[in-house]
Image 1: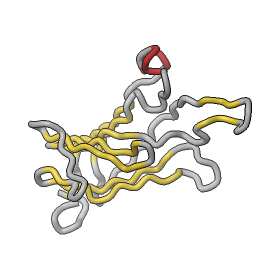
Image 2: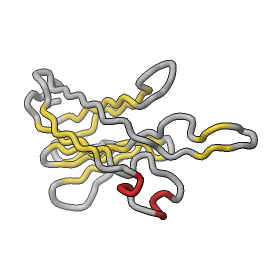
Image 3: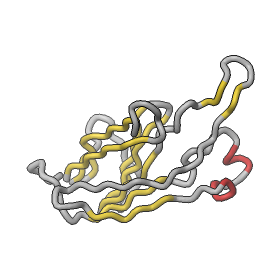
Length: 151
């Protein structure tokens, strides 16, 4: 969004779902994400005339623990919430959930990562909105994410 609240068409966006998504417990201790068939999923996009973009990442296997004694069944019961890397020149945003709490980092082109929970601002960009909701109301197969960054 620009300063007037309108979408910015033609903006180049790079979004990354990291290879570590879905790995749990001791997975990373015993090997690299590539050892489990995981790799960074990267999409280079351009915003449309309204300043929006949409991308559907390939399905990804995730780690579960299965309990034979009560409580029976797999844990977690749904796919974990992802963390994304979103690059808009001149900043990279790392946004997602950590233990069901929203968390983010803003990495400017020069300097260390910034985190200001009250403003979510870096230079001329501000993280305005981040929502994550199930992709299907009946059976969760993934997450739909909405991100608004104001310029």
